[in-house]
Image (cartoon, rainbow, N blue to C red; front, side, top):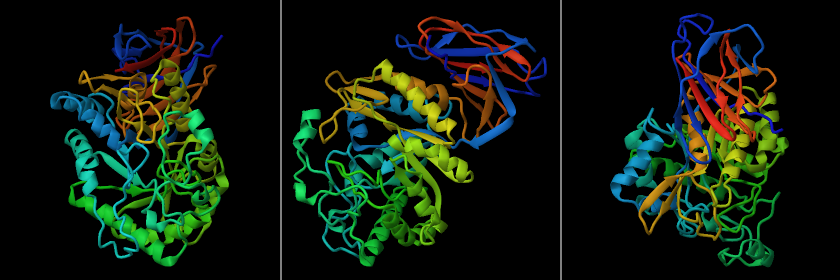
Length: 480
């Protein structure tokens, strides 16, 4: 029999859950493959000292949550732009307006092109422009800037952080945006893969620096970051944190740039003063390898250590987050990009996503970022492969739908407030996430992964609620 996972219970404590008058009513929302976010009959609350399936330990608060969000990509905006303006506004309100839907509070953006941009670009492709005289974010004025500004209309307090996928091509040894050629075996695995024009003899390699390791290039690249922060500030957009390189170990056919950890530590020594002058934090990342020693290298290097305030993990980097959290408990840790699926947006992948949420948050992550906010039907990137998204747009019909993963993420993000503390739990059901919000409400998040319905007893401070969770469902209970 499959295990029963635990997904969401939000309990307003009042004078405390042990008090008989603390809860007088309950709300319940459930999601299945057939229907997302459906109100259920309110379950009863009872005083109980008997056995429970899951006990929430209020006396053991763990990491502080900063929020949930996703990434602003160019293809996200072009997909939403296919909708009538009123419908696009409805989607953005659902994603960003406080208390309405997903309630996103922290999001990511690229510095220049990423794999879900319209095409390759950087903010300065003029060779040897070390003074950044030709720096320009004009490209972003068509896509990323209106995308972010519309989100800000619904949530002016939205936090934003950024990272590059590739520096300007003239700063790289291979003078190309990519780090891997499109080899025959890649095209066999991905028949729609687009050619990138990179010769095989100019490929990058994991464990080697593709960025030119000279002082004048480090100085210019740090200035490039500074110009980016300033240009967005002039647009009314504050980027509060940067990471120096997306997936710094990976040579990809799309914009990418392998670095060594030592190379990044050296660069952060140049980047740090520029960001400090602009009140912009620096995290190390993004980490896509299960190798804690890479983080140790940067945190112990005297050039970078004073500037690093956190670490971002994604993909195989999930294998390193628990150990880093244990050894550096004061360090902020982000899940920086959710694994992206294959464009099918099916229920099976939604259940896999719950496992990712549980792993990252259970391992100490303070924030969780989905990847693509929206894509056109099929979810195909500029470089020719499909990925999942929270929203799918049918360009021909000018319609949209929310996908399964949107509702799953909403089961957490709608209720877990910035500043919430994750809570320890005990009991037979260990697949459990629990939080206490700043307003003292308690949030648990629960999935019945079984093929049959299952009653589960949740207990908080002597009060028990025992809802019947439908087979293969996600559930949010709110106790008030």
